Image (tube, rainbow, N blue to C red):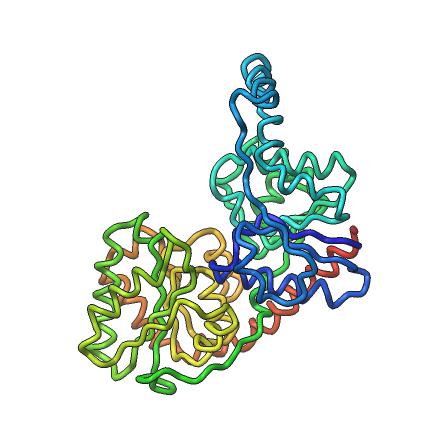
Length: 385
């Protein structure tokens, strides 16, 4: 069986790296899978990931306006409102791979959270037209994300593996078949232990992740985050370690976290981790933290899966659902609108401190369960392939 993972932007997003790492390790453990390929927007960033047999560059093609395909596409759009030819040209780097594989794993877990995706729908149609199996891997989709076109596309999948129960309910309520609840594969990712940086206090270092994406959506959030860090430094003896988890140009955690480190450097109690660690190395540091506060979902999964009490900044359906499946409620998950309120941030931090023992006990019980759920993804795939 030949399997292609596609819709992966590259591993400079360490969350995307975590998804690919764990998916490939799970799948290549079965001898029935003879070839495992990855279509990536940034293959150079993925070369350190084991178990991948072939890396393919997934780069959108340019549709020349006055080329034969461009002219034909213009006619189809004008008279029939049919953009399919244009999308087949734009996404030909994936479509041309269809004959080489038997099973296609759409691994961009968030792709269906960003409005209408006609290009994605056309790729899916071409995969199914060729008689191949199509699987959505580790997805999160909110009720507000659904549309008639999107539901039609999702119904074409042979299997939809969703990573939290909110998405499971949303899809089942929309009468989309073949939905199975698993857990995010990143719960299975191993950690790499590196030497601790200067200034790290064992048992007294708090991790902090912030993202430019959150800042763009709520510009007042950075000021409130500064106030939270100041509160931690004023009321504890702990060190604060700033943890980048996405290092993509124009969406680079490291750049915004440098502002935090520079602001609090004179305290002598802050650390900024470098921007060149891989996902397992960041997890190695996160696993040794007292608490973790994070905006990037997979940074928080690294904490949860290491049984570190965690507070989430600016939730999405995935972070809401993951917290609900662990704690029974959206515990310590703040809405995007709430994170510009310094009083609320500080209040939730104090709540996390007060409930530390209870949180650790819940994580000790639930994380092994989630890891077993994540492993089920392979069995579900093999059952339909």
